[in-house]
Length: 528
Ligand code: HEM
Image 1 (cartoon, rainbow, N blue to C red):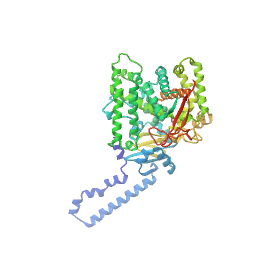
Image 2: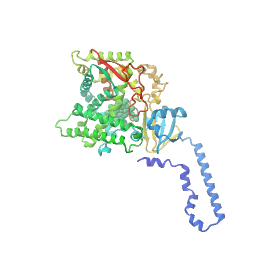
Image 3: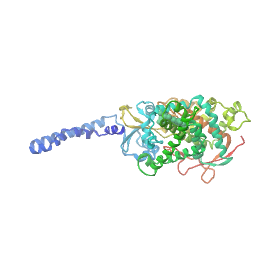
Image 4: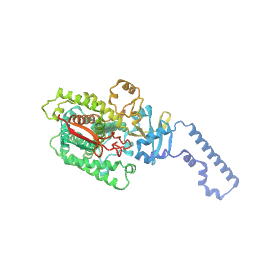
């Protein structure tokens, strides 16, 4: 692993110097020296050695004092807090130290955390900050093919990003839009005309099916049994992988490792069966699996890209869709604005006599994308408020000096998204849910004065490849839900919730409500 190279950079200066000192060389010849013992010569050697040692110490001290390239370092190991309460740890350390960057150790690895405009600019635009290694090492981690002996010869990160982008083409999205609406409608019909649901289960299942349709193939998306099996494996994997100990020491034998292994096997095998079937199929479609086969990819790569799409596509999309529903629950005015926008589109495009999903399917793709400003503002504000976790990178191809401080080759680099998302200079009253901030010109002006003021879809070198599909999924789902149901949030006992839940910002996989503030949605169908 690259950490070997990384560790060699960490050998303290004094230690290296001592190994190279004449004193050590003389000790190697100790036996020879002892055989011809001369007290005066020995004293002289000792004196020289002492002088050298003092010189080395002084030099080291002077270098330390005069070295403005050193990043403020917090001593000790910070492994547990970095895995168990990552956001709190980073936020509290910045507050306590008053620094704009700091370094700490996680096991044998070194992490540099950046903040502020310059730090954010460097983090998102520097090409020698590698995207993969940070997440691979510190999570969130998704199922890995090599754990179940699958070796995708043709897979690469750029190949995967290209694949995701190709599934977001206009023609492909326009073709799949009616199928997505049919899936959403069926799911909502199955929920019944009234009931209570946990959004993080119900919406998760629905988003999972939509993502399978967008990224795999219609045969798999149409099979209730296969989608349920995949979803169940995915849930088991996420639970097992998100335990701090499992994140820290993924190789540790025990239940989480067994669960992850079993779930990974189930996921890859299920997708593998459909890849095999599609390879034998006489007709080709525009579906994700068919597109990969047509490009000549081997089975292992087709399975890996498809699994990657489902994994990348489900988690954040579910999260944001759920939080939109929660955050809108006590914002009747915003719900009304969104419903008015949708009705206006239905009047222009739909036929009132058609079933709901057909009426919605009559709205063209560009109208979904461009003519729902209130829903866009709600989506953006939800991303700002909920997507506040830590983005990760790893320094490659040598050291770099940033604001006179040296980030070393092999260092991991982190940036907490809330550093800008909760900056009150850019977003006044940052903890309140206020979608109109993205419609008013003052805040737009404030945001235009800093680099990368909004990170919800990534920026710079790694913008989200799935943004278009995710936005579409979320808009369709929220639009149909608001059009079909009245709802309110209730607590575990079914009583109206006294306050809205808070996201667990330390949960690097989910940001679901913090323990004890779980919430449920009580809904009843409207006449629509
Ligand atoms: C609401 C849903 C989503 C949100 C909030 C979201 C957010 C993000 C963010 C913030 C990044 C940049 C991370 C960083 O810089 O460290 C990113 C990258 C990425 N996202 Fe998304 N994403 C969503 C949905 C999706 C979907 C549906 C897919 C694909 C199926 C996807 C695929 C990707 C990929 C491949 C990258 C990496 C791009 C690269 O390496 O250059 N995302 N996403």
